[in-house]
Amino acid sequence: MDGTKEPQYIQESLEDRIGFIKRMGLKVTAARKGYAKLSAPLEGNQNHIGIMYAGALFSLAEFIGGVFCWASFDQIRFYPIVKDMRIKYVKPVKTDAYVEIFIAKEEIERIEKEAETNGKSDFRIETQIKDASGEMVAFSTGVYQLRTNKFDC
Image 1: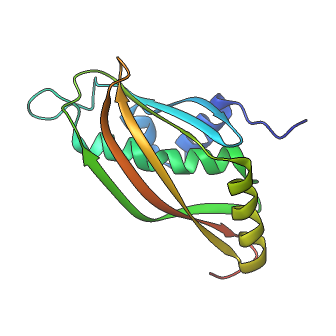
Image 2: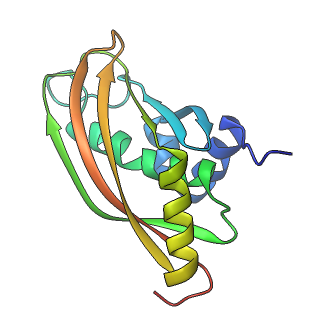
Image 3: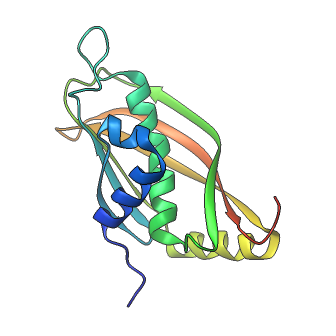
């Protein structure tokens, strides 16, 4: 087996650990080493004026880092945390929204090697959140840290 994890497996595993993800309706639509794509429905995530709630967009941007880690690293040996998260809202979202990321193989190798050596490794993920038509509605920058279970970091 090549270590690929099915999106449904990742979805169910993370929903079991983070109930908010299930309540919000976030869906892992694709996940493989170095790639993740998530979607969030407008329904249930609307604010007082009927557009997508800013916190829902923030959660979509933040959660992709965890999905990336689950798809790219061994969860028995590693776990991620968020160190910093910034988001810029560009336009109101009146549809479902999605985000996807691609992380180069070399960056994945760097992160894993550094975490194995030092017990942790910082990395940055930049996203573009898009509406159902593919138009960018927000962008974010997150600083994450991959940690090993063998060190007290």
